Length: 116
Length: 112
Image (cartoon, rainbow over all chains, first blue to last red):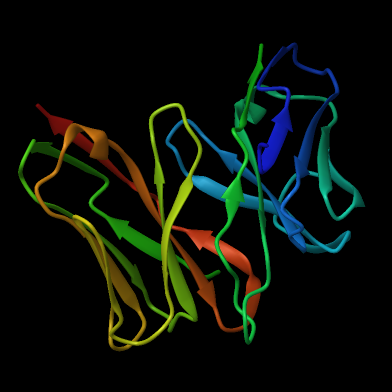
């Protein structure tokens, strides 16, 4: 069974469209993340949810809206797509460690978004 | 905001040579994790370091956490072509246990 799964794997769309990416984890973790990896391979955190509550919201255009229907799912909806949104989007999950801190993050396979 | 510097950006080595990547922070870290991302793949966890001065080994990989908990290194002895990929550090600061700051990564290429 895949620990963290994302759909779709590839997404090619026109500027101005709205699209969604879905993520599911079957690890029972309490926290899920969305990362954006640009063409230079920088991994930048976008959002984080802990038990369905938004806990990290980086400086991300409000065209990006995450939704967590339950702690195993974290979806990302993007409105009015722009050329600069082209990137690989990774979902990840982790569990709170002993005495605070975090255990390892498990990453999904990524969604390669191309905006034309 | 918090920043973590990772060097070098690229490293090209001949198979059998050693490789080291470094991660540096101006602020004391809570802990540091290392990840490897193969070309076209996703980041995969390698190790976590928590204690000051900690050294951990995984076969040919040696991970160190500085005494001041502000820097860390990943050293690969006698690289192999299977080591090709980008190595990232990810740090946590004590004021926020939920937010990982990733280094910019070191891309390793190994020539056979």
